[in-house]
Image (cartoon, rainbow, N blue to C red; front, side):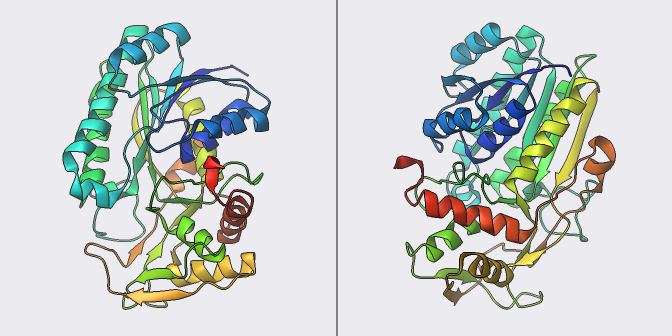
Length: 340
């Protein structure tokens, strides 16, 4: 097997750490750049304990071109897994300039320094939010892209940048993975989702309700055109998502060009179905409070992920019960997250 030297941006974060575990276990060498604005260096220590492998770490914002250049010159990576960026939809509406400045500016800085060291392979953490309102379901990669918020627009702009960049080098490969709804945790219970402040995602709220840290789960709307009236989403285990990055970067090593791939299960789960699954797995009741819909919330949102399977042999393997079990194990063993 060819051992790759891989730079992982945002590697101390929720998705980044799970990716690094898969990459290290596959034998690849890793360097991480992360500014720790929404992540914890303790997570990287746990990654090293779980894999019994070392890794390099640089604390820096990607827009710090000197720091990025220094590490790329030192490490000389074969490829990059680009997970860094701001990711909260609501915050992007309130602070759009921050999102464009950070997400797009950081990517431009990264690509420029990759060019300097002759590194032309990249897997980018994109998002299914690039699609916007569904013209049809499930979303496939040919669905029109009309993102409804600055976060989604920043992801789509980066995809356009990568498309243009990929034709400037004969050996360039840029793969954009459009995530649906990552959830769950590492089965060890040592690595999981640990947002700073109020969570942006549903699963940490469920875990905190089950753990007694919150009185009830707020459900935004029960009058959607779904099985039970609550919003339906495609939840993918973060471990499956991490395996997709491993498959994608190994595919990129021997292939050229720009491609986008949906990374989801192809199955929708409603909010109430997810709450019921979490209650069953945890043995704890999940109280719910129904309130009005949020502006822009969609009724249903799920993937057609067949292209990833056809192209590099990846498909989701873990169920919604696996997701809930691993998220609950993380919550029980780390009630205060990494800060403990």
